[in-house]
Image (tube, rainbow, N blue to C red; front, side, top):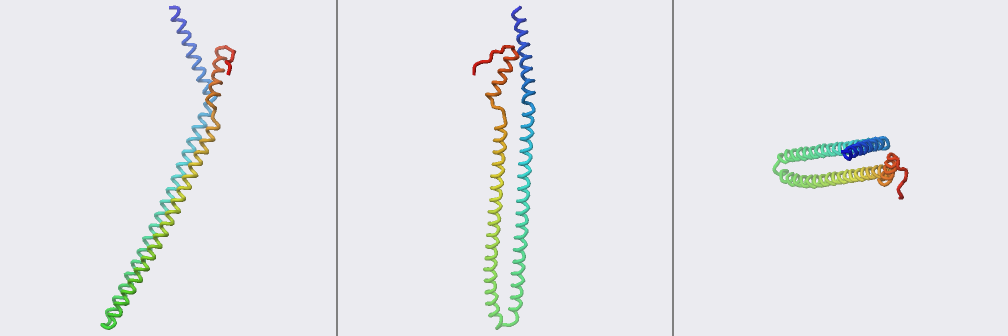
Length: 186
């Protein structure tokens, strides 16, 4: 019975010692941990914001590019239709002129097709170049963000307390709380 009471008293002193250690830990490191958590939250918020801005910018540019391309193709199609109609109307004036105009229309049509193909190729090349530029921009931004995250992580890692130092400090605090002032050899 006496042993049980002594164990209960020891258990209470161990629990109170652990409570004291937790309080000391909170006092010593609580502010730093909250600061780290806040810095991580701010970093995540900045990264999310940057990614959203870049994504929005890219989407806007692609939409403008698509709109511009559609307008240009519509203009060229309308121009071809108008030219074809005008040539066809001229071709109906006479039988002698019809053959020569037919040949002329075919020549113009071929030229227009070549021109349209050339302009389409140029437009495709321009689109491809802009796509490559945007892809490069995205890649550069991704690399910059990755470097920034790595740098922030490295800064946080350098600023944190080492595990061995923490263990030594807590061991010393525990010994002092037990009033056992003999420090262990390192």
